[in-house]
Amino acid sequence: MNWTKFLWCASWDINTCPGEKLRAQYNAMTDANCMNCDKFFHCQGNYDAVYLCGKTANNIRIAKKISDCREASQGGDSADSQADQRANKFGRDGVTHKTTIEEINDAIERTFSVPCRHIDLCLDLSK
Image (cartoon, rainbow, N blue to C red; front, side, top):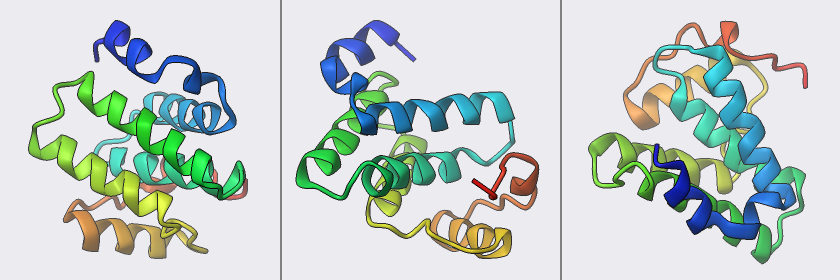
């Protein structure tokens, strides 16, 4: 990722509640190093950014902007980037509020055709 391009694009929005929630999920994703789990973290980060910070038009805009900046800083045209954007929207739309690991796995696999059967090793769902 081109951090200079990302930070220029995201600007001060990175220091807002949605920015902090997205950063927390990005850090969790890199710490987990879980194969095929990135779509979950994209979903969860956007969900947290909108629903934990308050579902306002401004928080939705900030979450979308930061997600767009992240993808743009990586090129943004690949099939994986497009899938990341679908996962981001999936989260902003509130779809990641699932109660079991099985429901999360099934939603990710159905939507993105990416199995993430070991997501329980990546996450602490008790939060």
